[in-house]
Length: 490
Image 1 (cartoon, one colour):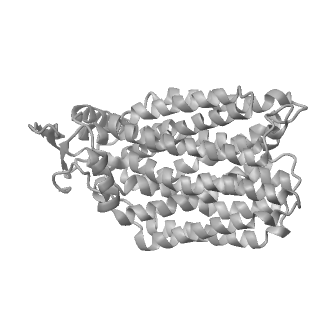
Image 2 (cartoon, rainbow, N blue to C red):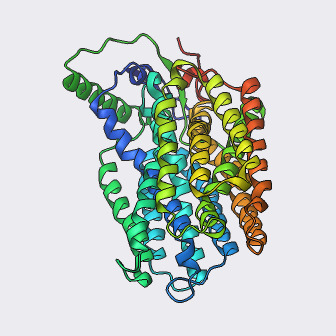
Image 3 (cartoon, helix red, strand yellow):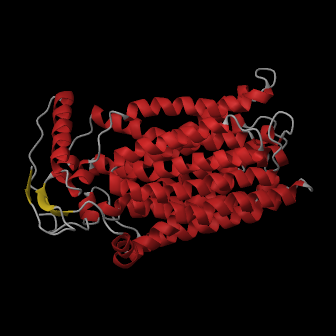
């Protein structure tokens, strides 16, 4: 329940004492939570579908007759443009998410994604294609900020780690689906090559419209509502959730005795947000930047150019099967290791997954000249079994270690900066390495990229050892007290 007292301050809308966070965190897992997982988590399936389709279509897109006449550098450039759009979209939509609410923005950003994907299917030249990739990226970047903040605010503390990591890992469900879909759609004996690659993008749009329909049932975050002067709406949503859980699980929920007093405000100024990130929590800022930069370079460098590497150096004609195996391993890592982030703890699991994956990638680099397509894929499966859980944990960390009023923008900021370091530089750098190594057909020409990715992952793991936050099982309000909180949790 909540009580309120209006304030005369123009900056403040009022003061309330509410038990909504404690009531949300004490909920048992129920069918209602699966609706949240499906409605919000499907965005990563869409992202995985997009990225994989582009990677697997590299040969088709290079075809000047049936494709767009791209070069290997153009393929890397398209990846960098997509990521640049995602960075800018995250920053733009992230601050809107904190200001106008989670639900409005996760509906809007999905529509932006759909627009970009549909337009991509009609690309007539490289420039059109690059612009469409940018639009699609802005939608996906906005989704990362809106969705991660909504998920963590709606999922009980006991399950937050495993659910967040598994949902972020579902990117690889889309990656597997995308890699398998491209097999028949790029086979000229099955589909006209002039249209097959366009159908790949159209299928992503069809899936997106299905997600849009499911999301209509996902509520606004009650935590966001009570801070922004809409406590009654938040109270009604929580009561409805409690009623649904009690009916589905045939139980009676216990009362809670924790509450928090909030000074409500419609908006939080950018100066205060910047002060929060850089002055109030500088160690957490360094931690998040390290995690995002490491995983972004590793994934964007390796995965955006993986299909190109197989076809250019290892004479693979159809990359879909290889990428599907790689994707299955990534999702398995998030699914299997995810629960350990709640049971064993955030710090040992984040540090462990980053360091192990970095060391394994360096070993893969040492052996690269002796690997064929299948053995390279098997090495990649082992490396990214660990790396996928670590990469997902980067989003989890940024989402839960900063105050609620800044959550979406913090996710956006670290995603944008980290990805700009690793995700834009990675594809461009790898595309450059591939172009220079193509003439000699020497795959070891891409070794510097492997070693750089390995070093960034190991360094981020070491940072996590010293600066990691023990957030397992804790309420979000205990991990980082809201900026508008008047008192600590009582």
